[in-house]
Every structure is written in C-alpha cells, then in structure tokens.
Image 1 (spheres, rainbow, N blue to C red):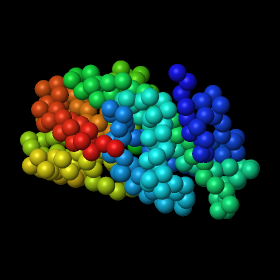
Image 2: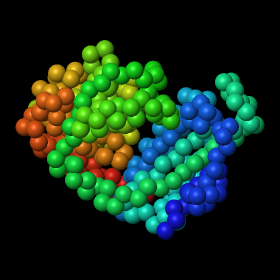
Image 3: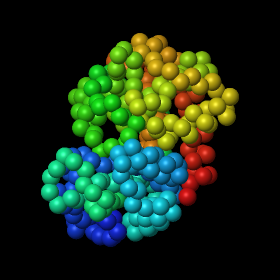
Image 4: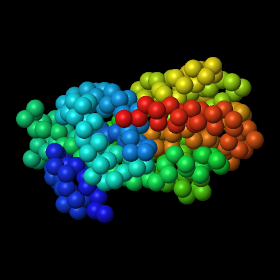
Length: 286
C-alpha cells in the first residue's frame, strides 16, 4: 500500500510529495511540528496538540493555516486513507517559500507550508520496553534557549540520541547547570515515595502534552507532584524514574549513567501511571 501524505491541501502518494528548495523550513529550520499518536484508529490527546501548535506558531509570529476543526478533519482523512490502526501522525508548518533565501521573515503574502504524514506502528501501546525499562546517559544541554517552542531544529537532540545509541542505551537526558532539563524527545521524572518530581514549565523545556495529562492523572490518583529541577545523582538515588512523550506514553527508566534506579526494574508507580494514562486517553480519543 502506497502511503498517502498531505502537502498544502493535496493528498498525494509519498513519492509525488514535493516542497520547494526555497522553503524556510528547509533553509532555516523555520517551522514547527506536532506528533499525535493513534490508537485503535483514534487520535490521542488531539486538543492538547492543537493548543501547543497554536502557541508555537504564535511565538514565531506565524499564521496558523487551519482551525482546530480543519486540523481534525485532515488527521482523520490521513488515518482513513492509510488505514492506520496504531501509529502516529506528523504535521509540520513552516513559514513557507518566499522565492529566495533571506534571513528576514517574508511578508504575509507568503503562505505557510503544511506537510502531514502517517507512521504505522502496530501494537504501539504494547511496547515491550515498558516491561523492561529504558537506560539513559546524561549529556550537556547546549540547545537554544526557547525549547518551549516545538520547532524543527532537532539536530542536537538527534546527536544526543546517537550518543545514547553508541553507548548501548535507549536515550540521553540533558543536563544544564547541574540539573536535568529533559530527554531528547521527552520529559523526565523521578519518583521518591509517593511523590513525582519533574522540572517546572519554562522556556527551558518543552511543554509536553503527555506530561500535562500524566500529572493531572497522578494528582487525581492522590499522588504528590513536585515541580522542580533534580540532579542526576538524585535521579540515580530515586525509587523510580520515567519519561513521557506522545509516542512512548509513560516509559520507565531503570538505569542512568550506568547506575540502577531503585531495583533496576520498572516500579509499581510508573506501571500504574502508564495504565491510567492509556486507559483514560483511549476513552477520550477522537
């Protein structure tokens, strides 16, 4: 089956999808993106992704090319055309093609470029890594200062992911001024007793959509939530650790820089959070 993608209002086979060489997303990384998971053919936490997309575009003084209802229709159309049961939908909005290369933003006559495509991931919610947990290493955080904007500037996270791969582990956690910011494409947490600790929202980290939902469910389950930075040493001494993201959902972390976290196996609190998250998100899926 040929994958059908969406480019600027048209649904076309992926081999026929093209974007101009003068597009600012290609030349300047001048664009933002979102990734929405699909479970059972339905979209997970779609409204949250729309809110964050609108915020990212606003922060970069870009026009949102669609209403939330239009975005929803496009997502549903891609799911249907590609027969996606479990997987993800990637959308990217760039400042468009001004016809030449220039550091200055083009005028409003240049329309944003919209690209969307699907990734089929059968059994996405049954990832076996949830039973064994991830291992991570720490690396310096040298990214730009607006990590709260979900831009397509992903070179350093890619380098960090490759550093983890070369080290034989699953991911890297960024460290800045002695404390953890986040993972390469996820938010980071530790658990001490019944308390979940994660860095507070700011321009230092991405405002994770899964993060927001998980913290809400944790509070509803009478778990204490403390939003503050933590060190790698504190994380190594925690009872449990985990990450959240749109595609990994809630994923336990069992080793940090070679040191086991807790028993070295996924703990009961993280397992319960994952269970609650998937249950509630499936019920609310659209």
